[in-house]
Each structure stands twice: as C-alpha cells, then as structure tokens.
Image (tube, rainbow, N blue to C red; front, side, top):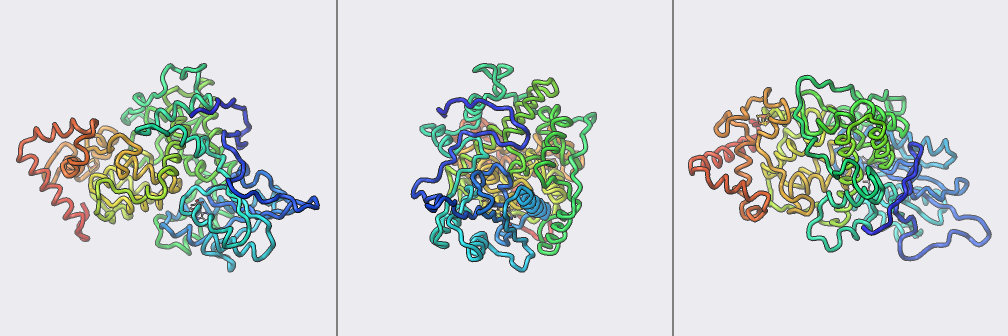
Length: 553
Ligand code: DLZ
Ligand code: SF4
C-alpha cells in the first residue's frame, strides 16, 4: 500500500473520519447534475439495511428539497437464508429507527415495512415502485456489501431507464484499489502484513514509525484459559421501545420457523445506543478482552468480547470511532496493550483484510471446496441436540442470542464442520443465517477461508483443525460432556480426537506438502497399524450415527 499516511483527526463519536477512499463517481458516463436553469435534479437515494449511517457516500450531496431516500424491508433479503429471528428484529428495527432519524433531519423518506400492503419482494421491485410514483433523474446508491446485490443493482439503469451512480462505501478504511495494490505480486496474502501497513497509514498505536510497545502483535499473550475466579460483567442491555416491539411481533408472525425467538431482545438499534454499548465494553470488558479472548465457559456466551460486530457491519458504529475509543483507553492507562492491540487488530486488520479478500475472489469464492467435502450439515446445528457438550453449548448460545464468540465459531462449530467434511455451502448458509453480525462479505472468508480451508489457503496458511485437547484447555465444556476428552478411541472417546486424525489421513494428498501440517503426518505415521485402524473405524461409526436420523452423536 503506497498511499501517504493519513493524519488522524479527533472526531466526535459518530462523525465519519475521512477515509482514503475517493467518493468520485464510477468510471463511465457522468450524468449532468444541473438541468441548465439552476435547479438540481431529483435524485432517488437508496439505502440498504447494512448501510445505516448518515455519513454514507450516497447521502453526502443530498438536496433535501428535491431528493427522496428509499429504505425497504424486502422478503428476498429476509429469506434468502433463514436469518435468526433476533437478527431480523435487529435489522428491521435499526432500519426503521434510521429512517425516522433521516426524517427528523429533514429528509424526504419512503419506507416500506415488510407487512405493509405496499411491501415489495426484492430491492429492484421497490426501486421500480418508487420511480413509478415520481420522476427521478438519477438513482444514487452506495455500493452494496454483497456481490449478489451488486449484480442486481447493475441491472437498474436498463431496467429503469435512469442513470445509476454506485458510489464507494467510504465506511471502510481500505478501498478496493488499496487492497489490489497491496496484494499485487504477493505469493500469499497474510493479514499480519496488511495490518501493519494499516497501522502505519492511519497512525494507530504508533510511536513514530515503530509500533507502540515495540511489537506489532500481542496475540501470544491473548490465550489464557478461563479460571473460576474471573467475574464477567453483564452484557449491554437496551430496552426495546415501541418500534422494536412492533418488529418483534412482526418477525414472530412472518418467520415462525426461523431460529430462535424475537424476545427477549436487548441489542442497540440506534447509533446512540450502539455508542453506549461500545463505551460499556471499553469501561467494563476491554481490560480482560485480550487475556480471555479465546476462553469459553459453560453458560457464559458473552465473556469479555465487545459484541459490536453487528453495529459495525450495519453502520451504527464506524471503524475509526471504535479504534479511537480503545486507543484512548490505552493512553489513559485504563486498558493494557495486549487487549487494546488485539481489539484494534480485529477492526483495522482482520475486518478490512477479509473484505478485500471477498471482493478479490468474488464471484466464485462461495463455490470453493478444496477438500471436496460432501456431508450434509447435521440437524444439531439447528437444535443443539447432541451429546457433544462443546457443540451443544455453542449452538445453544447461538439459538438463544444470535451470537457466539469467535473461538466457539472457529474451534468448535467450524472445527467440527471441517473435520466431519460438511459441505461448505451448507456451513456458510448456516453461519450467515444465525449470527446477527453475519453479512456475506465477512462471513464467507471467515468460514470458507479460516474455518474450513475450503479456499485451499488463500486466507490461512493451514487448516485450523484440532482435537479435543484444545477445547479442553480453553474451556470447561469437557467436564459436562458425555464423552471423555482424555480417551482417544472407542465409544467413550471425544469424537474430536479420532476425527482429527481421520481428517488428516483422508486428506493426505492435499495437506502432506503443507509445511505447517507435515509434522502431524509424521506423528500419525509413527502410530501402530492397530491404532490407525481404530481411528478409521471410530470415525466410520461416528459418521454412521451422524447420518442416522434417530441417533445424534
Ligand atoms: C440482512 C438484511 C435483511 C434480513 N433484510 C433486509 C431488508 O429487508 N432490506 C434491506 O435493505 N436490507 C436487508 N438486509 C441487509 C441486506 O441483505 C444487505 O444490505 C445486502 O446484502 C448488502 O449487499
Ligand atoms: Fe467437546 Fe470432546 Fe470436550 Fe465433549 S469431550 S466437550 S466433545 S471436546
């Protein structure tokens, strides 16, 4: 990345920092903004459900007297995967609150509720509806976060016979060409190097040209197992107002067979409440965020995590305000460097990196299946009905809260899907459905790249496969399990133990040459033939049980 460092500005919360991105129009034809007699033309400004920020590029030149903003709840988005009920409530309620804020600020807003008589089933239908009701000279939209929706929007100029201006999403800190420039000519793309460039460029946690603390990454300090003395603060709670309660009732009525329940509902649905959630994290959780980042405890879904992904991914919070809040906490002496650096890395490094990868590899990234995994997703991902306690807990947290933290997602739910050879498309659909923060651009690289290695190593240098001992080290789940994590084979054995070796054995031709996995093959090859046979037959029996509808492992 060669762009010059950006001077950081002190910004009030909620005010967008200028990013490096150009807000100029897309290449190609520029339609005139003036009609020749001094009046600006009427513009329809379309805002999608994950674009709920007044700083949005499609709003920046609004003429409130002439223009109209359109937001619409549409059946297509609600059902293309079966989103968790709490996720639907969150998005629709946040959209309705945002529409009200725009009206209060003097914008003319068209808003379609999903249960209105005027409801539309797709974005395109809603835009056709709006353009039939009034005459617009142009449609302006900020580029959607998802490839599928971009393809739909690209059809609008022909469909509507109106010019469409698709603007860059300036909420992100690296734009598409930044990522292309950084990745050009690199044999493999690793987040760590991208992250260092972003640190330097935005001057975050820097001491001149050196990282604060003389180290870029403090991850090795962020792996403490949980212990019985830690006290976990209550999660943020925002009381549902009348709008949210109305949305809860609608979601229960229209989507009875989606995961979970709408109530109790406690997520923030406005930028103001999301900022309060961020502040509560900074004050109450950030100090231990680093230490216990990978720890899991029975019946403790929230741990010391921030739970702000859903706000960032919908525009209620902006990346630089979250980063600034954590960095200031460090400089005030309120939080240690390992915690602050770890938190900032997620936003400035990982989040931007996976977005770059998504757009670089779409279309097609969603179809990658490096291991040719073909097994169906087990029913217990929807029901939590399994005797494997780590999976039961992680799925139950997901059902209860539309949330599970990153190690539950990666090392329990993702690891199982990897070892068991579950079809990546089904795993992706599940992750996209069940988490309130999940949007395809962030979900797909995390699941197909990080958890499943379905991309063959575009994102990670090796598959994150592990046996039961890692889960046992980082959690207390194994104490409450029907299986024994110390037993390696037979009916009592923790299935992760033999599935791990069976996975390596099954995929030998694809993994043998990976330098980070090679050592494990040497361990496997030193096992005696009986042991290797026991691994194979335990795995075979496990998969038989998994396929039998009346018996869940
Ligand atoms: C996720 C979602 C859902 C469930 N519903 C809507 C909706 O009804 N209207 C809307 O504008 N956006 C919704 N979203 C978010 C969109 O899926 C998201 O904005 C696109 O996928 C981005 O390309
Ligand atoms: Fe999970 Fe195995 Fe531990 Fe049970 S014993 S909780 S299956 S890791």
